[in-house]
Image 1: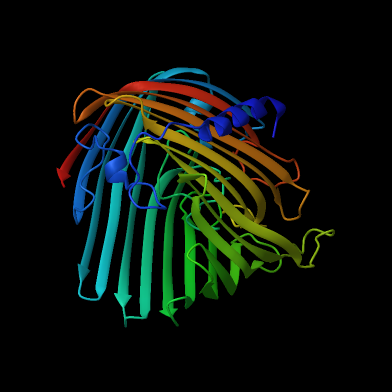
Image 2: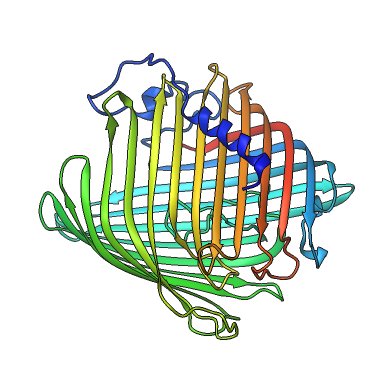
Length: 451
């Protein structure tokens, strides 16, 4: 991480851990009140819909003016670079999205569906560009018996633009975060279709122990010339023993493999040795502060036959994650998370050995005015620890004032920077380094059509 990024990271992390007065009565002895109680202003804009509704359909739109200060280095093939990256200055934009969700339970079968269609458009010196983004996910849960459940998931995403996903996801080690399109981060022209399927099995042996197994498969179908298709898949099996109401011991094994169409040598493999523990509870000094963490290990195996010094030996790495969460008053929350792991990312033959830190604080300043601040930092090596390094930082601050239940004004500041080492191969037209910041100010609306 560059030195001038450090104060930003420290300030945002400190903000996420700042103390606050507890002004609401706790519900239960060890847990904070539910969100519906902590955030009592659901009738105002951005307050959310009915959490008990089985389905919802929401139309959202916004108009905004923006200013970006973009600095890129070593960019070739500028036809693949977003026009906003090729200059610094102001521009105008608009976005619209339609999101639908459904959750049903019939006897022993539960069904869930979420889908969305979005279009983000902007005008840069008369050059108009529209970026569509479509996604759909579905899930089916089957209670085979009182002790056994099956889960099936499927996902499909269409995207016109691409971003480096440099931060590990809480949804899984190899989740690339492509479900939610973000025009402030997706800066390179690349049309892709992404597919994913998954299956899970859980069988409770007793009230304290369970067996589980899972499988996932993902495929990135690149529609543009010059980019390669990419796929990853993995399977895992494990045993969990609850030692107390807060701690559990995990024993298991997982296998992940990823490969691109241009890969040389054997596919890259990761063996996840899940021998560790997980822990989560409210801390004794504050029932509104909770800590969760889990530990494990992974072994990476890869060999590039076109590189003479490629090391075919397996490499061992400790992995894990920790989350510290704090409830402040009735409406404020703060989170600090750390993630250490091995992750696959499209366009890279070797996995990333990544350490990531993120912080978030959000809440209501008044009944109509809410604020959120988010920061993420990642440092990783590609292929071998200590070599082919890259670092990345992304931060944003968002403020919104509700004019009515369906209309609000907002302002957003973003800062996004990354740098890849010279030894890391990149696809043509992708910038090796980026240092970008910008401001957006506009109007936004969200109208529930079904709730």
